[in-house]
Length: 86
Image 1 (cartoon, helix red, strand yellow):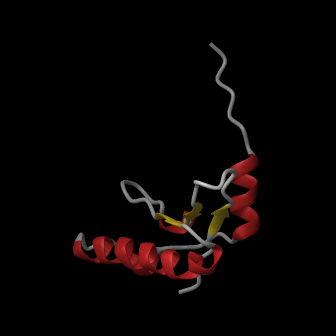
Image 2 (cartoon, rainbow, N blue to C red; image 1 turned 180 degrees about the vertical axis):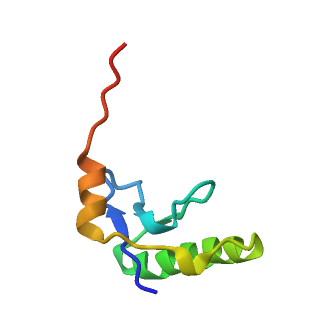
């Protein structure tokens, strides 16, 4: 299974790299992690993925039905703003 991974660079020295796996953010599930150094991003992402897939399997979630839309689609979603008029 290939999964797109979003990475947010820290803005300050005391912050970590934020990691998100959008394809695994389904329903009540979310797949997020953090890495203190860029060299640890892949390892931390793998740990987050393993953890959420294990939880999904324990809940008998249809893991085979997970679809990754691709990095470009997730980037579009990230930049889309929703405005609610009141």
